[in-house]
Amino acid sequence: RKEVEQDPGPFNVPEGATVAFNCTYSNSASQSFFWYRQDCRKEPKLLMSVYSSGNEDGRFTAQLNRASQYISLLIRDSKLSDSATYLCVVNRDDKIIFGKGTRLHILP
Amino acid sequence: DGGITQSPKYLFRKEGQNVTLSCEQNLNHDAMYWYRQDPGQGLRLIYYSQIVNDFQKGDIAEGYSVSREKKESFPLTVTSAQKNPTAFYLCASRGIYSGNTIYFGEGSWLTVV
Image (cartoon, rainbow over all chains, first blue to last red; front, side, top):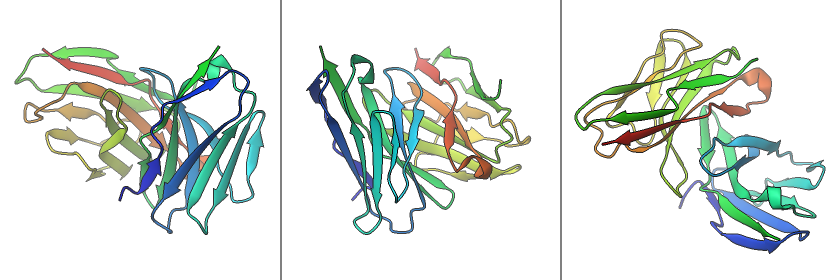
C-alpha cells in the first residue's frame, strides 16, 4: 500500500460545480499536510496547508481528519483556470511524500 | 526575489554522457530535495539533504549523484549509469521556519538523444 493515496481521476466537471478531492495516508506519525497544484509541464505550487481545525481560502476548503488519516480539498464554484493536477503532500520527519495527484478538467 | 533557481531549463544529452543539473536557493533553507517526474506520473525522490555536507538516498538514487558543499546549492549529476534518464527534474527546498512548506524550482527537462 502506498503511503499517500489519491484518486487519479481525471475528474471532468462543468464550470461552476463543486469538486471534492480525497487523500488517505498510511503513517499515523505524519506531521504536516498540504495540497499542491501542478499545471501541465510546470512545477508544483503550494495551494494550501491543511490543519485539523479545517481551513478556507476563498473558494477552497481543506480538512484533515487525523483519526481516519484522511485529507480533503473542496473547490466551490469551479473556474476554467482550476484545471490542473492536485497533489496531496504529507510530511513525516525529514521526508516529504507526494500522492500521484488527481487530474481535474473544468468544462466550459 | 527569494526563490529556487534551476538550470538549465532544457538539456539534451547523448547516451553515455554525464550531465549536471544546477539548483540554487536563497531562501536560507536547510533541507533540499531532488525529484524526478515522468509524463503522467507522480514525483519520485532521488536524493535529499538536511544539512551541508550530508545527503541521503531517496527511492530512486541509482544512476544519480549529488553534493552539498554549500547551504544554497544542491547540484544533481545524472550519470551514464542511469538507464532511462529522460524526465522532468525538480529541485525543492524546505525551511523549518516556513511551516515545513516545500518550494520548487521551475524544473529541468532532460532528454537523452
